[in-house]
Image 1 (tube, chains in turn yellow, red):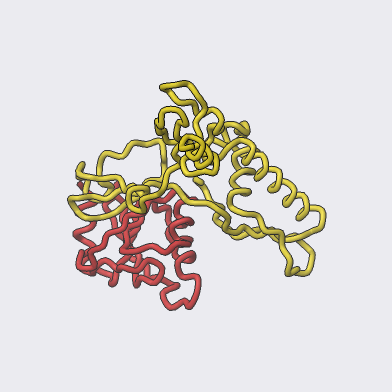
Image 2: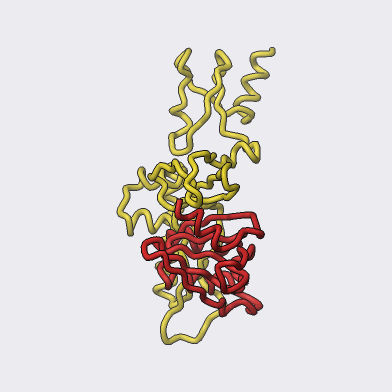
Length: 182
Length: 105
C-alpha cells in the first residue's frame, strides 16, 4: 500500500472514552481511500492493492460496516496492522554508500539523491528473501508461468497448448500428477 | 528545497548522528539560499515517541528529504505518508559540511 494514515484513529466528541474501539485494518483504510477518496473503480483499486476484485470487495464491505458501526454507536476508531506492506522502493548508491527511497512511484530514479552519482542499484526484496512467487503450471506440457495478482486464476491459460493452468504445488496439481503417474 | 540532517553537534564540523529520533541536533539545509540552521532536538530525552515527535518537527520546517543513519519502523511509515524522502547514510564519521558538499553535486 502507498499511504498509511499518519495518525492512529478517531474519537467521538462528547462521550467518555470507551475501551472497545472499532479496529480498522490498514487494508480497509486503504480500500476506503482508494474507492471513496481517490474515486477509483473496484477493478482499478484491486489492481493497485495487488489483490483480486472479489477480495477487494470483501475488504471494502468490511471497512464500510466498521465505519458505520463507529458512527452509529459512537465508538472510537483505531487503525491497526493487517496484512500490508509499504511499497516505497529503496535504492543503494555504490559511490557514497547511502540508501535512499523515493516517494513518487511513477518517477524514474537515475541519480543518487545524496551525491548525484548514476551508479545506483534498486533494492529488490524478492531476491533477498527468496520469496516464493505464485507459479502456475500447465497440466499438459508442464509449462510454468508467474501468476500476477489481480488477474483471476482461471484466466491463466498455457500459451503453448491453450489449456487452463493450475497453481504449482496446490492440491489440484498433486491430483493431476498422481493421475498422470497411474 | 530544504533538507534535514541529523547531527551530533551544532557546528558544520560535527558528525552525522546515526540515530534519528534521539539525535542531538537537526540541521535544516536550504539548497537555494545555501543557509544552514541548527535546531536542538527537543525530544532527545523522551522515553517514548521521540521518533514521531521529530517527524513532526521536520515536517513543520518544510523539509523534503531527511539524511540520518537509521530510521525506525514507525518513522519510516510516517515519512512515507508525508511524502518526505529518506536517505540512510551508514557512516557516523561523516561531517555535516561533507554531507552538504555531497548534496550540492
